[in-house]
Structures are given as C-alpha cells and as structure tokens.
Figure 1 (spheres, helix red, strand yellow):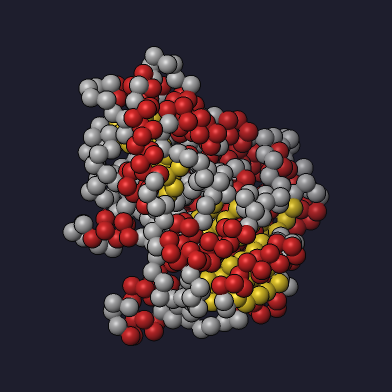
Figure 2 (cartoon, helix red, strand yellow):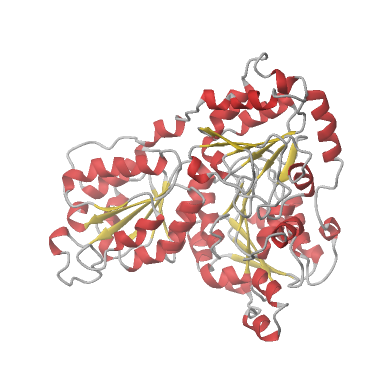
Length: 572
C-alpha cells in the first residue's frame, strides 16, 4: 500500500479514530488517502497550532495518543507552542508533517524546510522525544513504530515525523500493526524500593498523619480505582495537583482537593503543615506551582516518599526525600494489595488517622467561599464556575484555559473522575483550551464538554470555534469576558495606569462572533442568566459560546501560594 495509507491504517490499528489537520501542498497525497480509510475521522482546524491542541486534548481525554497532520515549514512552526505544552504536561501527540521529496531537498522548491534548508526537524527537536525526517520508504514502518514507542515509553511525550513526498506516494510492502497496546498495559515498579514505606513508618513513634499527593504522572496509568482502594484501606487522605485534578473523585470523603496553586484550604492545612508525618508523592514533580512555591512549611517529619518513572523529574526544596522508581498506578496497586503484616505500620494508625482526617475535613473547603453565591454585576468569576458546576452533568469534561479563569476553575470546579479536568498546567499557553476542547469532545462524544476560557484566549485562537461547529462537535465555551488580560492586569495594578492600559482589551461581542462562525451564541450580563443559558446550550447539543461579562477586579484564590512566594528571597 501507499505510504500515506500505511500511516493512516497504523493509526487505526492503534485504535485512533480521529486525526486533526490543516491541508497544504506538502501533504496533498494524504487527502485522497483519508477517503480510503473510513475508520478515521478527519477534523480540519483553522490553524496548525489549533490542530495540535486538538490532538493534545484528544490524547488527554481518551488515554490514547493524539494524531496531528500538517505541512512542514510554516505548518511546523505553528505547532511549536502546542507541542511544547504536550511535552511539559506529558501528553502523547504524534505529529506527522509533509516535506518535499528527498531528491528535491535543498534545491529551492517552494516551502522546502528540509535539512537542506533550515530544517524544521531541528525546530521541533527540543519539544519532542524524537523529531526525524525519514529518508527512504523502506524505513517507514520501522521509524513509525520506533516513534510510537518513544512517545509511550515511560513518560508519555510528543514525537514528530517528517514524511517527504516520495515516501507518501511510495509503496510499503508490510502490513500495519498495533504498537501502542502493549505500552498502555506496561507499568513496572521497583517493589524493593517501594518497601521503604514500611521502614520509614516503622522507625519509632507512631506516624498516623500520612497523606498522598497525586500528580500528572499518574494520569497515563489509568489507576483511579486503584488509588481509591489503597486510600480507603488505610483511611489515607488524598490531594492532587491541578494537572491531576479528578483522578481521585473530589466528593470522596478522603479527598482534600487540589494542593498547590489555587488549591483548597483542606489540602493546604493537611500537607503544608509541620505536624505531617509522611507525604507520599505519586507522579508529581513538586514544581513551583505544585509545591506552593516550594513552601518552607512542606517539612513532613519522616520526609517525602516520591514515586515516579524518572528521578530526574522529581525534586523539591525539602529535606529527607526518598525515591521509588516506577509507575504510580503500579505503586497504588502494590499499596492496596500489601500483606497485612507488611502494612502493619499503616494499619495500626488507621484510627488515629481517621480522627485527623475528620479534623481536616471539618475545615472550610474553599477560600473566598462567599463569592460562590455573589449577585454582583459584573459577574464574579467564582459564581460563573460554581453555577456551571451545579448545572453541567456529573460526567462533564471541563477544559480550563490559561489565565485568571484557570485559578477559579481549579479551585471551585469539582471533578469526579480521571481525564475529566484538563488544563495545560506547566506551560500555560493562552487559547490552548479552544482546540483541546474539540479534541476532548472527539475522544469522548458521550460526555458534555465545557471550556472555561477568556477574552484574551479568544483573540488568539477563537477561530477554532468554527471547527467545532463545522464538524458537529457540541462544545460549550464559557468566555470570562473582563476586557483585560486577567492575571497580568491584576499584577499591573501595582505598576500604574500605563501598564494597566497595555493589558486591557476591547469588549468584543463573542456571542455574535460565534454566530458568524456557525455556532450558537449568548451574552450573559447578570448572575441569574447563566444557568438558563447553560441549560439551553446543553439542550441544543450544538457548539455554543456564552459570553459572560465578568469582574476584572476579582482576585484569584491563591493566597497560600502567594504566601509561599513571599517567603522566598527571589521572585518571578
């Protein structure tokens, strides 16, 4: 079969059912090939960055990898930010780009971006696990399999393959095969290192105050049920980072909610507390946001037990850190199935831990909770998120874009399952959510999808609304329209009127914009208008943009993070 068909059928063999693309001359042979592979649904984005965001959202929501197809040269450069976001959040995206034929490279052909010119493979190399241009059709099966292996091996991160025109039209003499299936199931763990847990807990005085912190590295393990089982067995409270929000259901009696940036009061009081005996960190790096700006209050008496596939990605300014190499899912199963005799240090302190958890859970969950029912106009962003949560179905997938609205979303939206809360946590590119929401809806058509975004994000990638409408993907976009670049503007208030003015935007009619693109659009000025607008959007089952006029002066619920930051001698 042709090289194009081999690549597309290989995606199908890996149970991929959507590919996100922007057509262009360098991938012309793929266009008729897509018609020959009906198992694969093509979604044409407005821009290559949007297509890559969609593939990222598809990967995060589905648990599989996402596939993006575009031209080399300008297409590649448009995907750099999206691939960077996938890299930093460990989201597997396969980017396939077209290139001029090998025998024409470097001769001055239009849009030649091969190694014979400026080499777009080198542009993507820093933001992928592998960026490679295949020189010979006989290497295509091997290099495609190799790229998928690199993408899913340990940390799941994006890869890039450049496919020259002669490979697209050349003949492949082997059959496509599934590569990904075995990698999804493989979750090794160093059992001997894991047993450090019992040694730490059995070293002297009883240690009932043990908490678990789940990070984004746990997402790919699909181990939500396993961590719930382990937590329930020993009555151990569980917090997550913002990236891992929802892996542990946030209405579970042992849930502390998010710890770190925009985290809950309960998680802060339990974990950033010198009375804590031991913190078990699974799949989290304890970066600046996930550690409350490396708060000096994070000093468990027995230290931190960090479980991760790579020690390179574990670190914190905390003493007494212990490392366990392996997948978080495997560790959760190991813990839940541990023999009673081995687990004696946890078993014997269960009653005392139950009392401690009861004390923590009696604390208020949220900061600034009074804003959840605020009737102010312009609308408080907290009210927007709270009303959306009480209106949207339990299984809703919430996509939270980058900006001040993310802090409100992380803090006040409750998530009840894995892959139901998605955000570009590490890099934070504005407009990511507009495309990611489309990918998430393609991955989970049965689940409602709501995207919390802002007017600044809409200015960057709002055209992707037409992609959702055109392809019949009923995503609900809630635009926090405060006519400023929220987080930056809040900081600029301290610097004077000119910095503030530079971060103000125009009050665009985003509902009218949506209607012009084939979607439904509504404008909400008062708090009591939001729930009916959401109900109409759900009933219509159409792509809908709800333009919510919000208060630019609303401060984000990040008080503990700000305190941790202020404690350091240097600042961002």
